[in-house]
Length: 127
Image 1 (tube, rainbow, N blue to C red):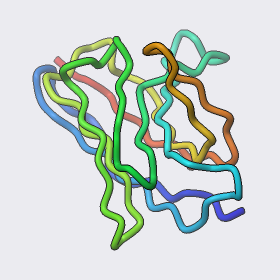
Image 2: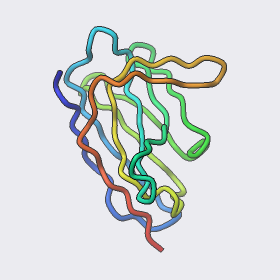
Image 3: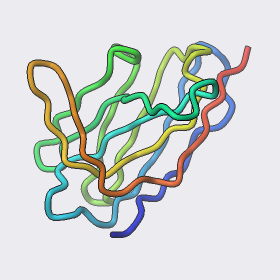
Image 4: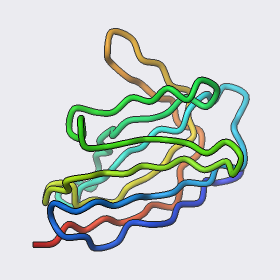
């Protein structure tokens, strides 16, 4: 399966906004969404879910940690999924990954079975 390709991110001042792009060339037979995960610097072995968007419906969901600040969208013509985070906080500093996955949301709880990970994009929130 072709790896998603990410771009964007960088160093952004606290309170600012940032957008990451993820171009998805291929979905596997069971994949129905693109999910976003992040890996914070002091927890290198954990991936915190940030949200996702369903390919066919365009419905999105976001994690509590970015609720009200994150917008996940897609452009089907360019096969691009976007994660925008507004009002950035220092704790948003992390490596961000888009993941092609089979996603479900049940009773407000999301789960994702990953097929293919993007290469990662770093966001550093500065003072």
